[in-house]
Amino acid sequence: MAEGKKRVSELIKALPRYHITKKRIPCDSRKAYHALDFLKERLSGLGYERVDYTDGIRVDWADGWVHARASRTEQLIRVISESTIRAIAEQRADDIARIVEQEI
Image 1 (cartoon, rainbow, N blue to C red):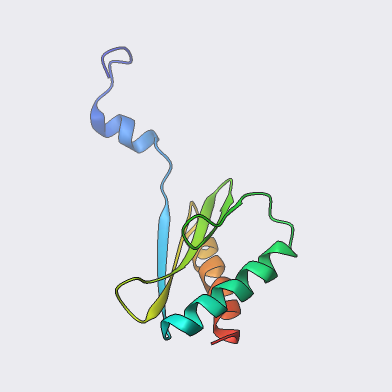
Image 2: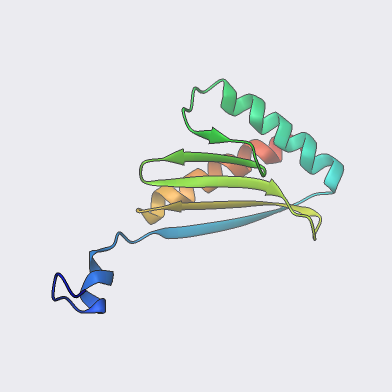
């Protein structure tokens, strides 16, 4: 701010806007982990470069990411997607949810 002589509002406007989409897929814990294993197998065959299995399954792209994980407090799988374009965030969440729902 001091170096560029800009207001906070101007700095915020310069940041990229991200849109988030959340989905909840009801299922019991046993089925949830089975469905996530199925998702992991499906994604490994698609050749994504940036996939993280630390806490669920997260796939990263330059313009966003999608994350699927079993809830620890409810009987469901959470799918969260974020992208600079709302339609892309929604499409990625829908695609992951569709794969997971095949195994529930």
